[in-house]
Length: 254
Image (tube, rainbow, N blue to C red; front, side, top):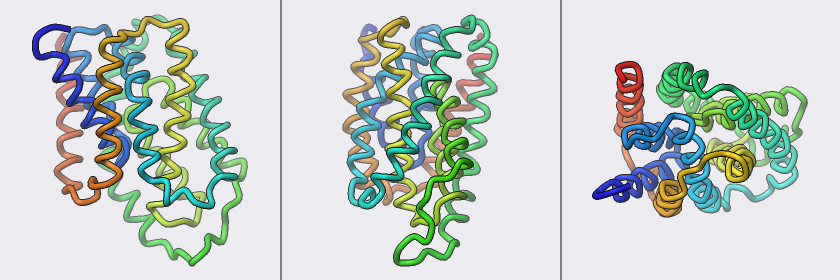
């Protein structure tokens, strides 16, 4: 990277860290940014996954108060998410890069649709009657399978996986939305961490890009967890959607 590119990557990581803590679509900022800087799609994807791990951890820590009492549940869910993430990462590396290059516009399009649908998911969860203590905290087979499938998607691509997780968790758990969001952040860390370890061991990672993304995403994760709720959600969502559409146009016209 030369000139202003490291600064763009840093602020992209900052924005992605904040968005991941709040919504879960930060990769729609950083993945297209790396593409725009000339990185091949698979290298951009694996570098993005590795670089955003510290930001995901930062965002999850910012929601630590909402995680109280969820330890047993999260251990089981993270096992399912981790295996799913590993499967997604293996699929990414085992398939020819041309396959990823072909499907990535459709994956970005799916991620954009999920970002648009996210408010409806959130409203549905808010309308549910929430008791002082959750009536149902067990983790059944359907929830484990759902989280596993989300993990496969996250390990392979990852953009907007948080929206998928919010939906799956919201259907299965009778909890406050903020506690579900906190659980989503921890599960997303696992989904990203497992394939990231695989990528670091055997894939071609652009370490300059990954490290700069990491620095920005750590700060962004804290900002997203602490002050992100005061930002206009519609404006944030519109910006993420615009970036995704521009990325699709760039890839299809490249």
